[in-house]
Image (cartoon, rainbow, N blue to C red; front, side):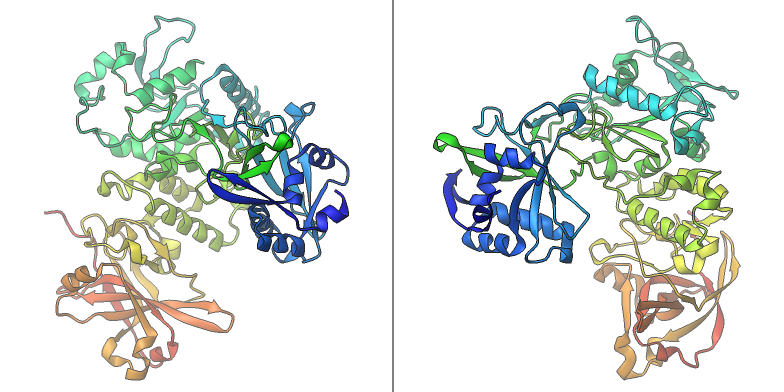
Length: 611
């Protein structure tokens, strides 16, 4: 780019959609034939220095404002005022011979990172000849997509146990679940679907389905087909496809191109871990919705939200849509409590998403089965969790520091409790697959969602302000457990020093050796240093406590920063049976209030019995 043009700040003004949109010379030149030549040159397109771009923003260039925001987030302080932003055109292997601006890759001399921007234009737009990427239409079931998916599956599995992805191999134990659907032969149009019941250990490969059962629609027919004791024999001989929920039908199509509920829940880990592939019905809200056809709540095509007018030849104006951030799919499946463990435990997943069929395994991050050339780089909405945590061979190499595992469990609990459960009593059941697996790998015992090894630190959970509850479910779990309340749960910082000690820890009885204080025991000038975080909404606190006084139970100390530590404890209420019920969490900003307080044995209230 000519240096004088790059340093100048003239602007061109156009009207786009009734709104005045200003484009500086550098940004206008970026999306032009001359700009394309420079983008493809060894030196790249020399856009602007930070100083020049900020001056251009003051002149009104909205694209400079957009580019500066992206670059500032990517490069941070490394982007100096005189450091020039340089763009290059990057084409995917499938379009090496193509023309036009495919992917803009921005860099600066003082940083090794690059910023990536994908431009889109609509068909027939004046800029369409320069930019080949069009709005993305949903395609999760074409021959092209399924062929690409099969290729990824073959690469991951390999033909022999010694082939394929190393980190995905441990899922080769091919014992079938207790019940599977035999979907028949895809080449036989008259092939029947049968329920196969494996009364003895039977080997074979199978697919798992992760989907939302959902709430029945107000005027919908009863659920088409349910497995009951009285229907078992008939289902083993034949199942009519039309009687199955649409999501089940779609899963069967994709494969061609409760008395024992607790027993099956405990097998959840191996069911998903050992499945050849898990099919995830990402877009379906209910089982009756299906996931292969259009998504009613989504636009028919995808375009980025950020759009800019570009002056073209013959005094025409094009409109360019720029995508610079990973696309986070909007999956009802990701809001459901049960499906977290299905995601975590599955070795390989095909996710039927908003616009594309996505693939993920233990060695390949979330991506479209056809690659990311269409302009969508995907962002997994879940925090990354190490796959090897479920690999028995890799376990000794992961989490040599117990705090790694401790943090992992806190992450699981936080992500899980942010999700919805149709039946709140499933609070512990819906994560049983993960906990059962971890009990074996970590050689520890989980008691109402708390590991024995980290029992004291895991008591330091709290309810954020937006998730306070009206009541506690003591017949589900003891008050000290996060499972006794509904909704989102967070944790206070890691306890550097544990003050409380365990005397007795069983499912039925918890006795701590700890220090306790009454609020009246604290000097008046230090009383405000104890910050209470009740689990309950304001009115519910009054109902829960009544006219009784709460006490403070010290768990330990955590560091706010290198120069400041704080205490963490429980807000508890003494019950009539001389046991203590949790009311919330307390943070102590002044630890001097605990000086001279003796230790005593305190018994926590157990889970209540159902009447």
